[in-house]
Amino acid sequence: MKPIWIKHAGQLVTMASDHQSARTKEAMSELGIIEDGSVWLEDGIIVKTGTTLELEHIYTERAAEAEVVNAAGKLITPGLVDPHTHVVYGGTREHEFEKRLEGVSYMEIMNAGGGIHATTRMTREATEEELYNQTKKRLDSFLQHGVTTIESKSGYGLNLETELKQLNVAKKLNETHAIDLVTTFMGAHAVPMEFKGREDDYVAYVIEEMIPKVASENLARFIDVFCEKNVFTPEQSERILGAGKAYGLIPKIHADEIEPYKGAELAAKVGAISAEHLLKSSDEGIQAMAESGVIACLLPATALYLREEAAQGRKMIDAGVPVAISTDCNPGSSPTTSMPLVMNLACISMRLTPAEALTAATINAAYAMGVEKFAGSIEPGKKADIVMWNVPNYQMLQYAFGVNHVKKVWKSGIQVV
Ligand SMILES: N=CN[C@@H](CCC(=O)O)C(=O)O
Ligand SMILES: [Zn+2]
Image (cartoon, rainbow, N blue to C red; front, side, top):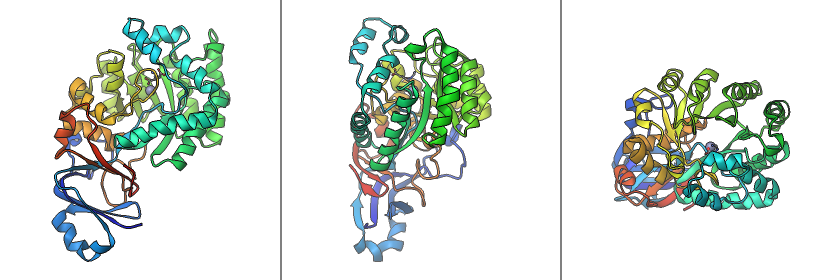
């Protein structure tokens, strides 16, 4: 494999810094920018960054053996990281989109057996091969949008067999697809129809049968729960996350999405790595997250798609909460693979600055899924996951919105777009 030498980048955004945790406050604006930047990649790893002049001093003699890439006038960033997806699913729900536009709410559809239940039926019916093929197309689309690492949740099985099927599909895709996938067990995504009226029995099933099996087969790194009115109560959520923790799974929580439900407070209480959505979180919940370092994983595309007010991203950053952003790619509330659009929306609907949005989609996203050691920044020793954008600077990336500016993508040093 030839080394790759990227030279003359209009702007090289490295995200390099001495911080050893997800960035907060002013640190979310430190992008580690190098003008006329240059990067040397070798064996799929980032070896050296600096100005083109600096790298010419070191590498001119080896230039002949490298593939030299002229990035003049282009923006270079780390591969984007998407820390919250439900990317492995069967079927689609476009008919529900129309219903919601007519005024039926997301929860009304779900309570009537649609929503997550509809996707659960389609995911149960799909063979592993069908699920693999459908998901692979979505991963290809993620790559086209500059995303090189994603988190992938189960939660459309809601029985042991199908939850394992989903996690196995993600595992296989991690092995075969360029994108790195990190898995989350989310058997507590909804109470399946067959357990209606027996919610605590389902909680017991998740705790006693699903979690031990998922953990023993080493199929997930995280555990997540949809803590929401009419889904799982904070008490049930705490029990499920506690059981996951006992098996070494790290907690995440879908919190305060539809109704305020003290989900942010619970995230702080159980020591979750991240809390997701947070549209309706209280000031106390935001404060609790700031104090305990829970990463707010905000999903502005979901808020837009549900026609809800976005989360209070600006307020959270000002309060000291580390913020990450994500597509929430799923067939109901956010059928998108566009992290660039999510960055645009983070600025427009949550008042993040362009710099903060980029931090939220790279290094903070990497922290939210525990991959900060190899992803989220362009620093020596990390995977050579790099995007070249057809814009001269990062502000332009956020300003010219709704457009896919990706020009080239390298994943582990291989050009994949
Ligand atoms: N809110 C819960 N889960 C997903 C949506 C799942 C679905 O509608 O299929 C979310 O994060 O938005
Ligand atoms: Zn979600």
